[in-house]
Length: 261
Image (tube, rainbow, N blue to C red; front, side):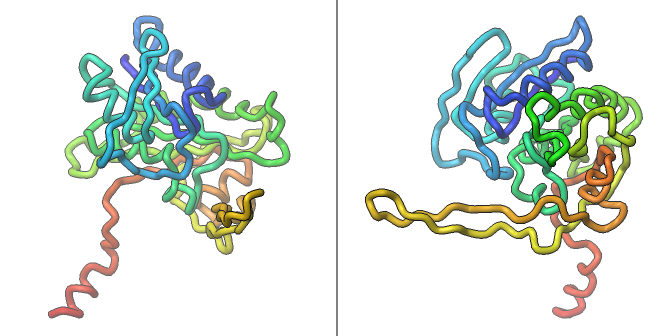
């Protein structure tokens, strides 16, 4: 098996090393793992592509490249320029921090998986929820290390991929904010919604008197509704959300049609 890995935390991120381990085991001794990751952190860029400017790409080692672009750019660079032939699987992560609930909409980690799905390839985004019980670097990615291979292999072997659909499925996996020994299991969930966790702004001033604004996030440890991703994560479970890039609100389509009838 040939696997492409990327992330949004950057080529030197510790979570990418964890993903390399996961990918190597999934690919097997006769497989290949190719890395094309952003040269610098690209958190929060979602499915952005560098449509209006070129990007530099550098080969750092055999099958290992850094690109001055977004995670989706990295997927495009790998498919169009770097890899001979297409990969069998795209893995993105392991993100340092959760991409559950509304975070999924901003996530560069998911942006790479989206681009893989749009290119017709199986793609999985993996993120590690952080909290008081796993914030120490020694245990930060324990849950991802312990369950990553199992989750990826099970999705490949048994998960639906619906290869004939126009908008292919991809998967959003979040590992809970606990040490590996305390993970309770794996649950398929819906994407959740956090109340009062919106992104906002915080002004600051430089030493030269110029005004700047930081973008800041809201609380991450408020549970979402039962059966959704963040609720499962905070209860100690790995969450798996099947997703598509189709943004149509199908449940109200007929109402809109009637409004203009």
